[in-house]
Length: 223
Image (cartoon, rainbow, N blue to C red):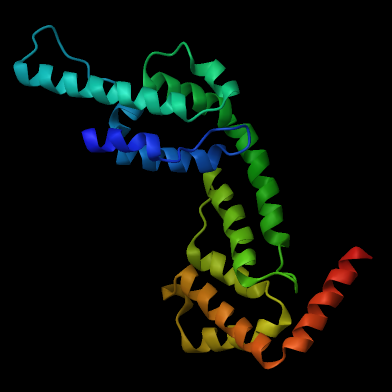
């Protein structure tokens, strides 16, 4: 415990703003687990009856230490606007619940947001000027936000979407992957590596052509 606390000043802590709720939640859950305070954030302090044993007192004492540590973390991990909302809350569970109510948006807002994300997901295509890694990041950002709104989407569905939305230069490698591998057993990282390797081979064979294609694509976008 002491070791974890002593590391806090050197850690780069995530800060909640008006734009990064989903990402911040993921990072904070990892931080709570690392600091071993997830239980007090989610459930609060244990309720003990009038007759308390020595063991229960020891458990409560440890829980209060966790409670204080979790409250300290939450105070360090929000911007000024959010701190105004939580500054009078005395327990981390109370703070966490306030932040959820303030940022989660409720079912109606989630539904509208999910509809928008689904539309983006349907329409997204990799452009000629995109790098493979950039395109994967775009798709995964959208799908992670969809999951945050309650959508169930598997890695297989994501990989199939990516393979359908690639430029023509990837047709050969996509067919080769589908014929030689069981895509359902692949990981997203494997697919990305295969596509990046293919793209590098193409660029190495004809760098001039690829540069001209990229330039044309950029000029077309400016028109």
